[in-house]
Amino acid sequence: MLGSLEDAKVLAGGQSLVPLLNFRLARPQHLIDINRISGLDGIHERDGGIAVQALVRQAAVEDSEVVARICPLLRDSVRLVAHRVIRNRGTVCGSIAHADPASELPAVLLALGGNVTAQSSRGRRVIAADQLFRGVFETSLQPDELVVEAWFPASPQPYAIFEESRRHGDFALAGAVRAGDSLALFGVASTPVLADRADPARGLEPSGDLEASPAFRQAEGHEVTTVEGLARDVAPLHPVQQAFHECHGLQCGFCTPGFVMSVVGLLAQHPDPSPQQIEEGISGNLCRCTGYASIRRAVSRAVELTK
Image 1: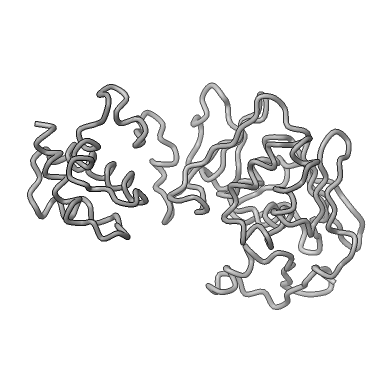
Image 2 (image 1 turned 90 degrees about the vertical axis):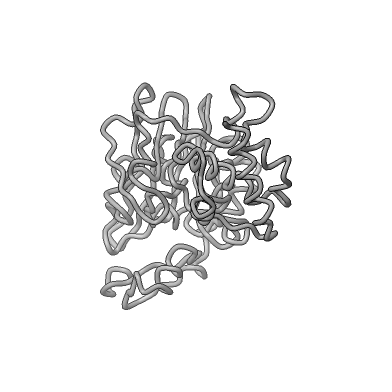
C-alpha cells in the first residue's frame, strides 16, 4: 500500500506524527494505520540481542524482563522518553523511523551498533544504524518501506545514558549514550553521531533552536556549572543558596534551581543590581507558589553575602 499511494505516512503510536499534523508541519495526503496488523507486536531475544517489532510500545519495552536482562541500556533509555502516558502509545520503531535528532532511541541504536529491518513489496532489507540516519527527520528508508523491526545488541559494560533537558520528559537539549567503547551523542547535530570519547566535541557543528543555542549544545572550551556544583568550594552553601534559605525564597522547590542559577548569573554581571535589574534577572523563571516577594528579598540578601 505504501508503494501505491503518493505522499503517505505510517501511523503506529502517533506520538511523533500527530503533533506534526496538529501544527501543520506535516500534511501527508494519506495515513496508513498499521495497528491492526497481526504479528508485529513481539519482543524477542535473538542473535545475542533484542528484536523489537513495529507495534511494540515503549512502555512494553520498559516493563520487559527480557529487555532488562539482555539490553538494560535500552530499558533505561526508554524511561527518558517523555512520560509514561506517551510511552503507553509511542513505539520504539516509530521513534527510530521518525529520526528526531534529539531522540534517545536512535542514539542508542547507533551506540550499540544495531540495525532495522525495512519491508516493502520488493522484500526485506537490513539497514545498519550508521547507514540509517541522513538528516533532521530524514532516513535512508524508501517511501514504500516500513520498519518492521529494530535489533539492539546486548548492552556491553560499561553502559550509560545521560541527557540535559529543561524538565523531565521534555525534549533533550543534548545527550550522550555510552555503550562499552562506543559513544553516541544526540541533540547536537542533524542526526545522532558517533563521537571520539577523548574529544567528543571535535568536529561538531550543532544547530540552534527554541530549546538551546549552538554554543550551549557544544560547550567546547566552556565551563558548565549546575546547581549541584555551586557549593563545591564554599561549603556548606553558596551565598545565593544561603540567601534563599535565610529569606525563605524556596517553597515547594520546583523552581528553585532555575532561580538560584539565574541569580548567580545576574550577580556575576551586576554585583550590585538595581531593583529593575533584579526584576529582569529573574523574569525568565516562574514560581507556581507565587513566592516572588521572598525571592526578591533573597536576591538582595545574596548581594550582601557576596560583597
